[in-house]
Image (cartoon, rainbow, N blue to C red; front, side, top):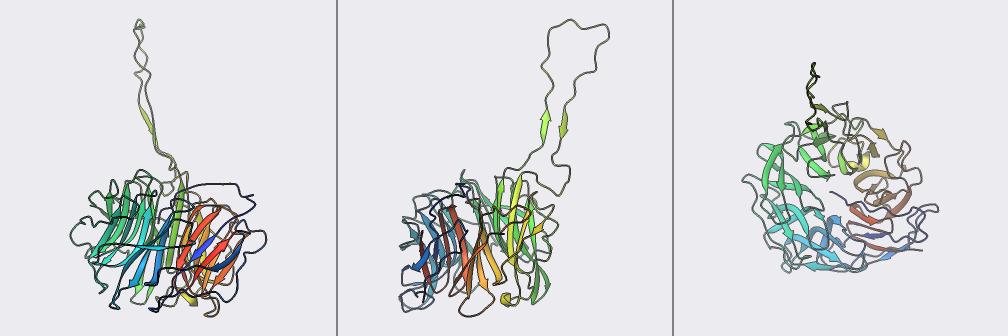
Length: 426
């Protein structure tokens, strides 16, 4: 998902990091941590974790978006009074210490991703019904979640898996249909969605999306090897979703996770001829001025000014992410070149990443099944240097983490399954 950029000093004396996950049961109460977790010395993210309660109906959360340090929304699945599952949206107004459920249309069966541009405008994507066969759906709010509505989607949309919205309220989403994966575009939260262009024909699915402006977006995608194996790749658009292409790399990526891009793409510039004057025309007239266009950068696969961080795992076998080792790949030029970061050995798979605060936080699963099922990796680097993540602090939690959003260096929320943790800065 797309993340807003808010940089603060890395020398902040006290930081608050909130990790939130849900009780994966129908009994209602949040699970608690058997002991407090404290971030490693030297990390800008400091404090002690303790349990935080969530609404009892929530089963699992798949994504979170925090437009401010205090206001966040998260989406996933819940259990209704009859025991049937349905989609859920929860919100916090105090940085993750407490959460409440918001009312969404009852036909929505599951929500996979969301993007909130401010405290009023959010867009969430997923599917209608419980069959897993669609159709796809998008729900939006323009009043902070008091009301959520279902805009119409192009015919044939089977599942919407990723969305990225920008401060100008322009949104891009990725959806699967009979013809493969394609883009959907909306010029404003709540406005009609129109069909964009298809992703390359060999793309099996899209896992995450990050946009730096209305024209430039990057997506992590899966390419099929056979029925049980995939490899990860990155697809890019530079024309607002009309056309997409695969960039070279990132090398070694198996099952892809999330992506977080930031920066301002360098655009072609045009030199304009000087205005005409009324000076006498000399006997030998000079050559008429010409207009020249220079495209930057020279490398056609690069987008100067944009840095991205991609996370995932080395394993290519579907359903066995713990068999691999987590990967973090960074590009300083929009995908033309990649640097593989050193990742702590405890990490088996990283599902998503947020670099909104400058420093990055990635979350996922640990190698050991117990007691470290989930893991969060925080760093004081911005994820784009030659040696990023070198000051990584690892936070083990009881079960997997699946979403993270950082509004600033002092406020970060992650979501997942079966536990609820709140970190009070120390």
